[in-house]
Structures are given as structure tokens and as C-alpha cells.
Length: 168
Image (cartoon, rainbow, N blue to C red):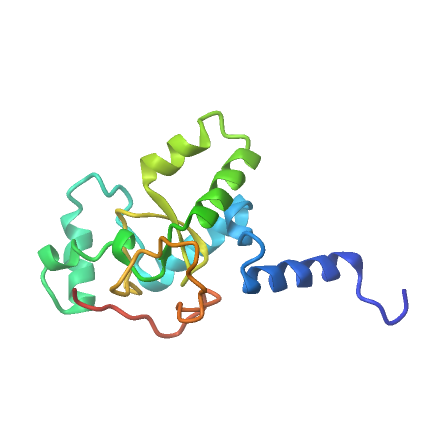
């Protein structure tokens, strides 16, 4: 195979090309390891949390409100579910559903999606729960329409040096 790319490399290039053009599901929707790696980047770089959004978590909200220079009460209003990088289009939800089914979950995929009100974080490239937040939160979301072309969405490989927190 002199001068040719190995088949696995060709496949990966094709997947990345399809992802960028919106023709394929993001890898993290179907690959648990990739999803967990990217979620950990969001935790490490942008304080993704709180761990259990159904608990009060006042220490978490005080910490993130300091980063945003606002009150914990105001910070609680800035969630993944209203972030401009949170994608919940029918197409993306179908990708998440397909990935959960591939993972062999005994629970119905839609029960999992509904329980976490899941979407896809475009900034850190992972499946995200709407009740959580991070320091990269951007006002104006979620993205819910399939006709959204993605041209003005935030783009990232999850290695951003700079994160943004905006007040609502």
C-alpha cells in the first residue's frame, strides 16, 4: 500500500468530513469512551456540573457565580438547556438515541434522553444534560430546529484556551 492511506485512516477522515458537513452523527454520540473523555475536558476546563443537578449544590453555584461575576441565583438561570451550544434538533436526538441503543442499554433510549433532557454540547463535543452548566455557557439556546445550518455555531475541539460566561 505504498503512498496510500490505511483503510482506518480513510474511514476516520471520511467520518470527520461527514461530521463537519452535518451528514454523520458526532462520534461522541455513539462512542462512550470518547463521550466520557470530552465530558471530562468540560469538567476540567470549564467546571461542567453540578454532579447531581437535582441537589441544592450551593458550593458549586457559588463557585461558578464567581467566574461569571454574578450571584448564585443568577448563575442557576444559565443552564446547558438554554445555552446556544446545546443542540437538541431531531437529527441530533436521533444520533443520541442510536448511540444509546448501540451501547446496549437495558433502559429504553428515549427514557434516558428524557430523564436527563439530553442534548449535544457543540463546544466540548459530548452528550450533555440540560440542567447542568459550565463556564463556557453562551446565551441564546438551545438549538432545536433541523433546518439550522450550523454556520454560526460555536466550534471547538474541546481544547479551548478561553471559555466564555455570559450573564442572562
